[in-house]
Length: 112
Length: 113
Image (tube, rainbow over all chains, first blue to last red; front, side, top):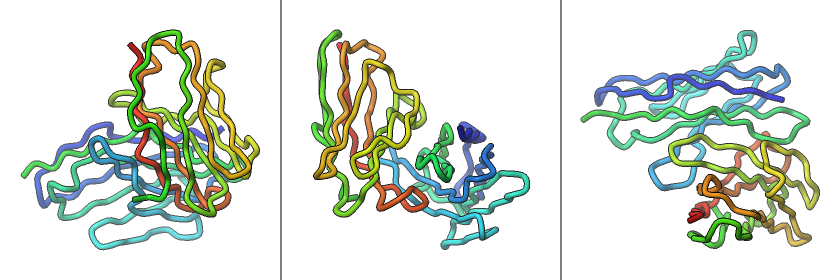
């Protein structure tokens, strides 16, 4: 089945700096790549997603890039704020298996 | 509020016991997923149902089982509970096949003592 690897597992940045989280996937048939944010004690929530027919997508301070050839995608957060502190999960959708495969998560800490 | 309802929110039980976790998906969503999240761990996929049928299975223990009923709500049954089963169990739903957003419930925190 699909295997999603996510790095780094923890990331600390100064407020105002950028943060980048990277994921790789194994199944070339995967075509949907969402990113979820999970604040402490809360449920994961979708923050941005990208489909395989698009190379980049932006939403204010958040952007996601996809390299289908290399089978990796990344989350970029610019001008980080303390409220960005959370665990971020990437995921890949394996067409036919009807499931979202999640990465292991990145704990982002934004230092004021 | 995601529209996905999980009950109960908290559950404390003894080893060897059996519990049932319940999930009501968003109105109209046909897919239901169950995930296990242990302390400071990632989301481990357990099982997925689509319109009443099992569609995908992850690392779900034989002591665990699930089903989706005609009204699309789902139940996750955990039996012969062990201390290591203590975790946050999330249910998520999505409208069709999962190349669309999955909405998570608030989770059921299970503590086995």
